[in-house]
Length: 309
Image (tube, rainbow, N blue to C red; front, side, top):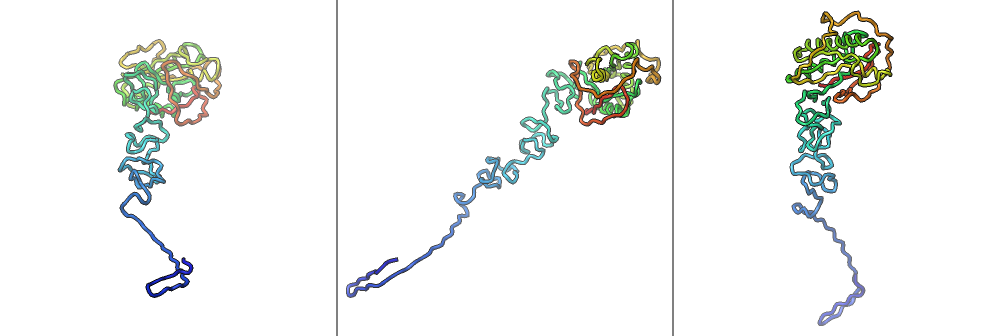
């Protein structure tokens, strides 16, 4: 814009009023130079301003926010995960594999003896020589050596463990609480241990690998003064012997192999109360139940267990 412009030439002079305006519009887009436009520094297909995992290695598959895929949700990306199908919620190491705290080759979730000494050979349940596990839920009919249906289901898993661990011999231990006479309890525990052995042999375990022995009330793991303590003392344990032979006390063996069908009642009736878990004896481990089914039975061994070989 100019007010009263003047134009001069050799022969003339022009004075006038002048006004002019202009408007310029422009658009520029560079198709080849990354200096302009959104950037994707790691080349994963997610622009940097939306990439929550910058620096992803070339070629790694990522999600919508630029983070490497983690199919089993264990916190280790698939391209680094050496165990890509870890169960949900499983604690894993930096390679995405389930933890094995004692390094015995059995992951923690399947390890019934999680504190095995380094270098100790173990069965597929993680237990080595001189270690034992309480077979919770291996119950019997009241005052007899007859296994319950639930006990047989659990022993199916025990048989699978033994069959998959052919280099190990085990002792099947029967234990009772202090109610009743010493001789009665010893006889009852022996019959129950033999009943477990008989079932395992029927499931394909070599009988020569199994030693059945009753200990009666001699080895309590809790006080016999309470119902909870007595419930813990009534148990069957599986102890790993390796190649060691443990003699069976024949003093209380019945004349026949079948469980005694008509045994005397205990000195005073048993009353069932919920069991409270207490620590077991040293070198004795208990499987944590994965699922619990309440039993309405009056059985004196009233506690539940699910065996995972």
